[in-house]
Image (cartoon, rainbow, N blue to C red; front, side, top):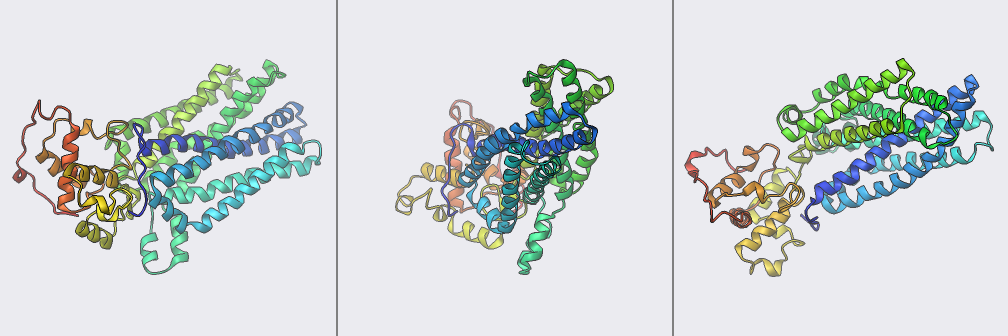
Length: 456
């Protein structure tokens, strides 16, 4: 509660993070896969004396500079900016808890960049053997960057024994249990498979923009690139492995518990399956893949990546860091909850509710401030995930019941934290958002009809 709250009109802070993150993840996966593809292709080309394949690797190596090092770097900075202003407390926690993990990843990233530049500019300056070594250094450093980042990302869903070890003061053990958490290994396999497939599809697209290649040349390159899509066959069993490591409630969400997550999960699975089948057909029939078909495959890969990232983010709800930090930015810790429930959320939100204005603010204004303190991280007023249509036609009594027992009525929502007066203020503000509440009054639900389970 010690950070400013950023309100992103219409699209919301969560959607802003998602847009930037999905583009970056797609580019980052391409960087990993392309490094492996180039290293494997150059190795095969030199062993077989394949001049065509070697020429393609040389021509495609420029893409390693233009896309990952430019667009990847820009979107990477964009992620840090968006998460810092939308979810500052979670960002701060991840930086402090994984400071040596980030440092290690940045070392691998530096090696990746240096090796990428050397690889591209040294085709005629290094011996074949040394140039190949540089290619494998790039591939290894890019993959090791993924190895480290994967641990931090998966920790946010499955923290393992991190909290208990941290409470015992065993900081070294807590770090390693956090990195090597229950979903670490299946997620690493899934991301590696995704990276290889994206690189293979990108090669199919790129070969069409190299005008010096004949149709037969392209068939040969595309057939080799299609082999990198075949590991998609591992997606279903590894996904089963992954979800078996996830707690039951979030695991249920993509399997019917949330229609949005179920649909996105199906989008990702179907797109991955179709790409695999298409690649298998290309390999078996030695078919040519047109530029339009290659671009379609690339679009499907982007949809699959975005869909699975949406599911991964969504099943963490109601947490940002499961079991520790709510999506509202409030820690799920008894001492903090007791303090905020007793003293109020607004007294600890000076950036939102200045102390000199808090005492003079009317009920509706205080309710708007409570909304900004607890809800703005995920919701907008009337845009993406807007609350206005959600409270359409509700009366004050319905709003009070839903806010009071929010986490029980909707398991993917964190509990309301604050005083009774702040809860009343939030209900008043939400009531004011419904433009037709005076025209079509809802059916009143007696408070006695609801069996409360108590405040959090």
